[in-house]
Image (cartoon, rainbow, N blue to C red):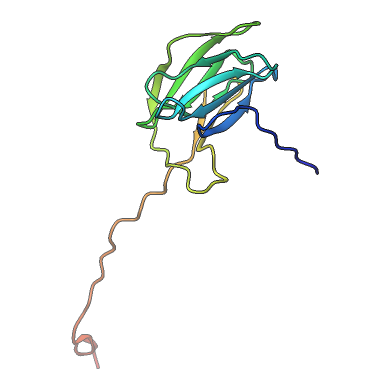
Length: 150
């Protein structure tokens, strides 16, 4: 399998976590170009059209299968969603908070996404840290031989 990488965006910002829209015309990604990570959507057609979707930070953008909603994680790990009106230009609603997650930060460079959403956007699967087991008690019995009956 041949994989070809090319630079889609130019600049000094760290542009990460790119996701094609279901129709292949748009790319959602996170970038620190504003000084903090935000979610953007840019046209893949070569035009310079770009939208900032998140308003208070965001990472890990994911499209709903029909392209009418974009999900992302806010800095406090809240799962956010923004409705999208598709067309030759896109219209994004103000992102809405769905629920607080306990997803962990990506651990490795290969782990870009710690969650996914179902095709209809009604369910999500979130990778969380396993809870550490509580302390175990140990009973120590001294002089236990004396308790044996002869």
